[in-house]
Image (cartoon, rainbow, N blue to C red):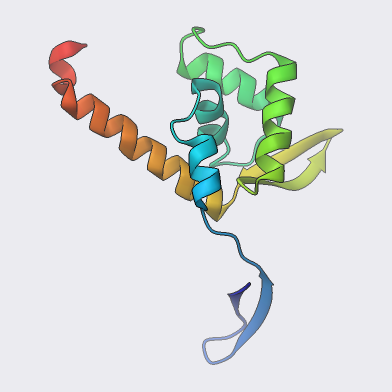
Amino acid sequence: MNRCVIYYITVRYIVVRYSEVRYMTDRLKRIYVPMSETAFYILFCLTEEAHGYLISRRVKELTCGEVNISAGTMYGTLSKMEKDGLISFVREEDKRKLYKITPVGREILDTEIARIRRLYRNIGGEAYL
């Protein structure tokens, strides 16, 4: 299946390029939703380009040190997410691979965020913090 990617050259002309498109499938939804806390934070951090070490530091900051992702877990998860099309390799910088979330990954992340918000609402929100 192909998707249409539009690049604007001028206000009047466009160039169209076709590339493989992926959608969130039932299989991916079964694998990733509900998502482990580790997978959630990795995908969440990849809304901006990042490498494994940077993701690890961001997760520590976000969770005040409560979640610590080991190198083995980090790189195993990144590899699986890349294979499943949730993230993609962007470039290499100082011998570190930078990744970014894909549209499929964003769809999975949004689904998980909606699930977490529903859970939060159902327990009474801030009343139970």
